[in-house]
Image (tube, rainbow, N blue to C red; front, side, top):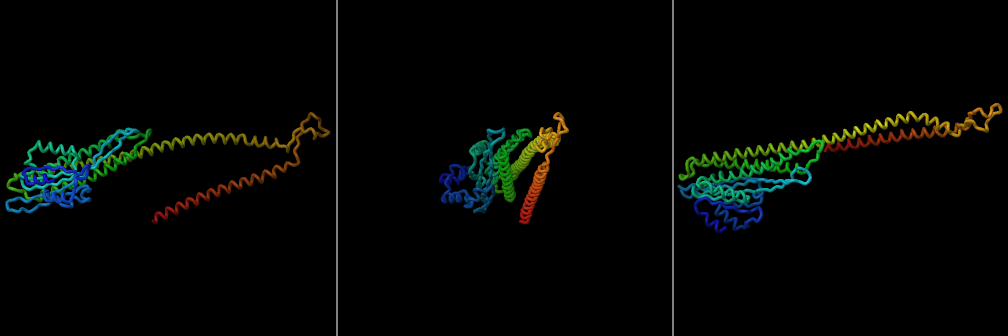
Length: 395
């Protein structure tokens, strides 16, 4: 930190990379925060928890010049939040299992003069740091630090690239599910994975919208600055930077619309999966109903056969009782020969009807009573449910 502070007064563009929230963060003690405020004009509120975990913000401040011919110093602090995802195959079906990571991108830009500017980058991914190094080596730096917002136009190019990559990854995942959606014959789907994707899409839509607000604040502050900051700044620098930032803003707006469209596609895909599952359940219900219909036909056939054979069975059982006697040897009359058949009915046959008819009546009466009890219980249950629904509606 002492080396960085000692180089603060040197001319040119200085880009500093610091890690404050991700793995192996730099210790942000009170002395370090004070030094960052003194040398890079980073206010104390930047280190508070609500700003370190926010999904984006923008702050700009200009310091009046100490001498008439010196341009005012300009300090701006802004933050972006990006959710990156990655996918891998699952063991069940061609679906994907998603992992994710939050990228907390914070920047502090301090412009002192057309020949001196400092950009402090917090928590940038390593590949983004490398891309910034490559960009600084491949373009003239005067266009970056000759104007207070030259740094913003430079860094926004890398930020929009990160948003573009993150949203395309989500789009590719949604497209994969569209190509491997379940069918009515095979309705199995990874519902948890689909709802995880919906959560990631909602977060991406949110942070992309916040990023648009941050860029709008930048553009508003840029347009509020004087057209000519310093005599050393070329006359067309402000208009060139404004055009470049408007280009970046239009790109980010397109990313935001793409994110919204992808989210709508994912919602449509989730609805389709549930409709396919419902259609599959409907087909199963139809098959069960068809099987029940076939069983009903079989039972009807059995019932008809029972009706056909029941009268004969009853008559056969009735006349086979001991109350009837056909050709008994001990009841032959004197006028009948032994070879002539004889039919004899017992004088106690009335006992059969005395026992059978009351039992039959009691059985039928008990059946009617049992059916009535079932109907009353069913009506009582429906009344209780209606009372509960009415109470719930009142609440």
